[in-house]
Image (cartoon, rainbow, N blue to C red; front, side):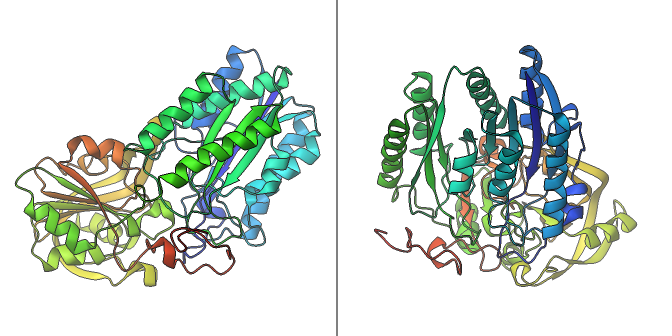
Length: 483
């Protein structure tokens, strides 16, 4: 038996001013045929898992590219088509294969392609024919269209947000694909659309129990696989929005009924899971009012993982204006500022213009007098699911009692070592602001007195009812109470 595998991932914010081109993929741990042999990172964790499990099962592995780009704006058509054709060429060269496993995102949009994942999977199916098992692992912030369902045998989606379960879902997908290839099961996929645009945090109730109950239903054999596709709100495509996914063994009716039943549970929780965000001042008020401990605030509107520039100064400007001290904020993406700080070096006191470089989402730049505490030529933070996240040349600076992390690679905050790895301690800070939406949570919750979420006026729009969709026309909650 032969397994073919590849990875191609990015999450497209169609409202972002940042283009996603060839360099975005090739400059981010790109690998032609050996990504599964590299150290773990976002793009290769499932491939590492599949290679290990294939070895245990004595299955031959043919590996194509591992390519992932930081979330940003629409992918350049030529960049997507080049990467797609590399995968398809490798697949043709591999000869007959019994299983194809693809690590994709699910919200990749390119010029001329509303759904890159569906386009790729459809072309894979044309090459391998009807008998080969095609399995796809997706980020839960995905769009799902009928083309994907019709051409894939298996769609398994992360269950956790933050995404701490990439390897576990890869294991689920491999086991199901192997059973399907051996003709032990006949998977059929059903979607249940929810007509909802929202963000669901799985470490807290009621979502924590919902995820646990999905896994329990799978373990009991009630269904082969259950996934909740949260959707990615900032992708203006006709099929955006949350969906429930069920995979049954040869029984399409059972799959459909199961997806609907679990989807109705999500709908029933809509008010308790409705996301509300502080203004910057409300988050600052909460931190200053706390008698002790560290308040961690997610500056969700400037999350690089959602396609924001990560150089918005709105939150920092309010902290400075209000005289906040003993605080930290990061990660600012500003390669120009980092280049100046590298020239100044540790110990320098110097003027610095920070942020505000990428248009309206970035807000205005700030002119600061900063002290340089540390400079690293290659800073790395802990990433998702045991991976590592590279930040490139980076610096820790301080301005008026606020400690700031600046990096040359655009990246959201995943772990406290984004700060502490440069020497910036957090236990003595009353307020720590992280440019992230939720992936920071597993690392920061243990050190936080309280975790809060805020949204500034600049950056990604967090009012889901007000997202200015042009191509997505369907009514949805919370814009409409009963769509």
